[in-house]
Image 1 (spheres, rainbow, N blue to C red):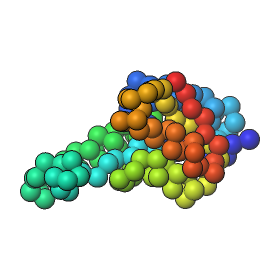
Image 2: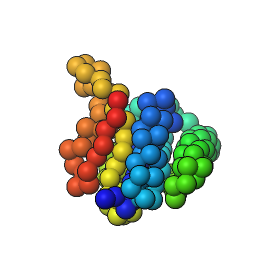
Image 3: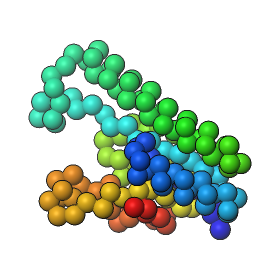
Image 4: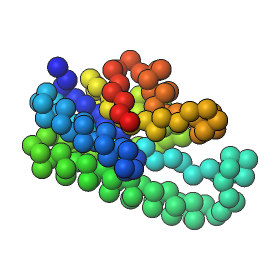
Length: 147
């Protein structure tokens, strides 16, 4: 059924639920698992919402974010491997999480995307946006959403 499943994770409790389901589904279908963590780029100017910091400090912050993201992805790969699922991890830097997920799915020839949704409604959804909604709306690949 599925040859390659992408699980998008941010390391949160809710996304760990999505990871567990993705691993179980990959095991059932004999699929390879691709764990993805998208790291935002640090805002470069005051107008983008960032503090005015020297570029060396920004580089340190982005390196720290990438290191933390790699740890999250490595934990998913280790968990999948322990359950007999072939897995690999990927950390991607991008400004828009949803676009990075969709682009990775296309590049990796993914047959299913698994991700969590916080289920925000009303003003919170409007202010915070919904990466999951964007992926659902724009992905050509089926998406399994867990809450």
